[in-house]
Image (cartoon, rainbow, N blue to C red; front, side, top):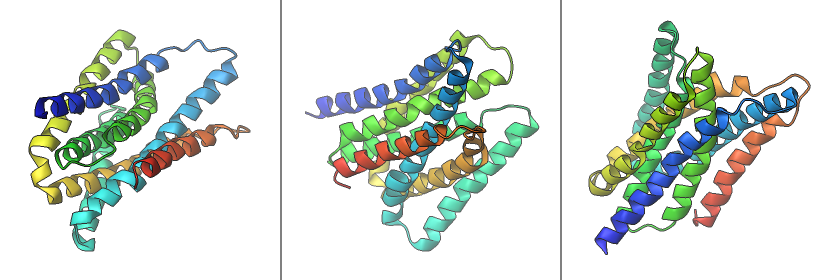
Amino acid sequence: MLDQQIFTLVLIATIAGMAMPAGALLASIDRIQPRWLEQEIRHGVIALGAGALISAVALVLVPDGIKHHSPFTATLCFAGGALFFMALDMYLAAHNTPASQLAAMLGDFIPESIALGTTVALGGGGTVLLGLLIAVQNLPEGFNAYREMESAGPRRPKNLIRKFTMLALLGPLMALVGYYWLSHYPVWTGGIMLFAAGGILYSVFQDIAPQIRMNKRWLPPMGGIIGFLIGMVGFMVEGG
């Protein structure tokens, strides 16, 4: 029974993680015609990722994170995450390394994978739906991160997709960390979630949201609505 439980956890976390290279693979297709449609799709996918990230913060990371924290410690964790991501953003900009959306993607993926592992260890329900929610977030985030890194200079698409595939393996690894270790330390788990939530919101408002708007185009922001809606429906189905 235990082996089956661990196998299911690793499988769900792996599938959720592989949505990142799948998004990168989709982003590598750059010959969509007409040209205006390609631009609108790109901005819509960026908005979808922003909506999914905000839904993760509002419906998963913050609600679960504050359960074992006082307002004071929750504020410290949340603000600390935002300040850390700001410092990371400044460092990447100073070294001409555009990877803010990659940082946001991992900042979301790692704590949610940990939450997936702790949920299974504590006997909670909705494991498959939580894995689906992570996958839905990872697809547009992989797309956006690939486009951001590609725009920095000429890179071989296969190399970038290979790197994203390696990062996907962090999912099952962090899920096992949550299952075997952090499930015994709910205060630490909650702190990690709040830290990630603060960093993700910083990234959304600093880097992702400004790229969504297009002059005389009104559909791309609807991607954000759809992204948040997916998270909201998943949260409701889980019984949240």
